[in-house]
Length: 236
Image (cartoon, rainbow, N blue to C red; front, side):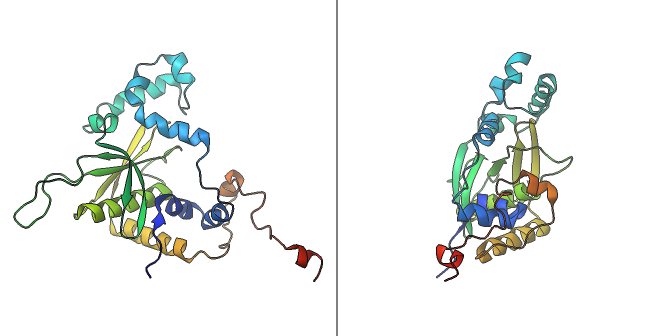
C-alpha cells in the first residue's frame, strides 16, 4: 500500500522544525491562529487596501508603516501579473498530487486547458500556483518552509496538468511583497528530503538547537515533556 499523501502544511512545518510537526500531530493542533488567517486574507484585498487612508491601513494587520505599505502596493501594481494576483483564475484551490496534496491560495492561469497539440500535450502558458505566507519575507528569496510548500504545489499541479510546472509565487501580504520561486534540482532535493522526514516521523525527532525558533513555538512549554501513565507514576 502506498504511503498516505502528505499535506503541504505538514511539509512546511517539517521544513521549519520536524519536532513541531510531531507535537502538532500529537495534540491535533494544525489550524493557523486567527491573526495568521487575517494576514493571509490581505492577499485577496490589494485593490481595496490601495484605496485606504493611513488611519484605515493602520487598523489592518500589516507590518509596515501605512505610507510604506501603500508604496509597496504601488510597486506590486507595476508587475505584469498584477491582474492575476488581484483577480486570480482560482482561489484556495485543492491540488492533489502524486505524493502531496494541499491548498494553493491562488492559481494564475487556466488549469486543465482544452487546447492540446498533435501529440496530446497542453498548449499555452502553464498555470502558476501561489502560496501566501502570513510572515515576514527574508531580504532575498523566500524562507525554506515556503520554498518547500511552493515546490509541493508545483509538483502537485504538474501531476494534475500532465505537464511541467516550473514556477510559483510566494506572497507576503502583510509586507506587500511577492517573490518568485523557480523549480530547481536543489529545491526539489530539499522537498524530497522533507517529504521523507514527514513520512518517517513516528516519535519526537531530535531537538533543534535554535533558541529563536523555540521561543516562538507554541509547544515550548511541553516540548520534551514525557506523558506518563498512572500505572507508571504508581511504579506498577
